[in-house]
Length: 294
Ligand code: ADP
Image (cartoon, rainbow, N blue to C red; front, side, top):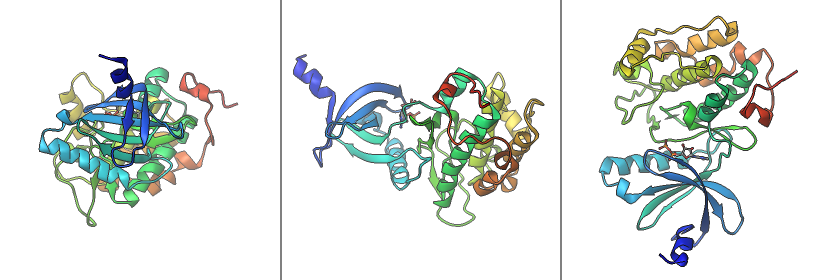
């Protein structure tokens, strides 16, 4: 293969506009494609570019899922949601260009740190809940909030991403019956096939808050079967090391009745957020070690 061919493989041109991106560092592999830094060759601005081979999208339901992910994500503009920049395609691939989150996700952070301080969880959870509140205000349910879908930008701001399982609610009181995929922090009403709505995101946020504070998920067991049993039985324990306010909020989010879980606005007004030290910014050192707020 000639070097000319090798070089041109690393330059991606938007067919309709001629805008060019240089492919930079590999960021990660997803279910359908690969993600790289995309550098705008005019401005040098860095983005995250998702490349999905059309050969992965031969099944009609895969194509429609991808189209729905794009259609939903495109409409959203909020500081705590990964910004959608553009999408385009050529003969080979579908491309999605997103705001770059250079500090990866809460998944890598939790693996590195195991658990975070309550002040950090206050900081991170308030941003995740603010992003989710914006989605719910737009009548969008994310349906797959998990550590790996909550990205961290260079200033340690959180951004919700991956709208692959998101759903738009069309009318008040509507319940979704089907979900094409397996959410990580799956709510009991989904497992019990009772119909589900915005409450599933509150449930997932409860699981996320628990995991960040305790160092492991609330319903973790050896097998998926046993984990699903515990979710259906609402069988979890809040360790005594967790503060009263944090434990109270987790318990409210993990209510087995979705109607009784707090709304996003109610979560932000909970004592966990309105009392205790609330850092306005986090130091970069907290990506690797417990910060000293003193
Ligand atoms: P999935 O199939 O899990 O949705 P994606 O294709 O969305 O995966 O992403 C694949 C990987 O690329 C992720 O694990 C993540 O590490 C990285 N990634 C995705 N979006 C971004 C982003 N906006 N900024 C930085 N990295 C990202």
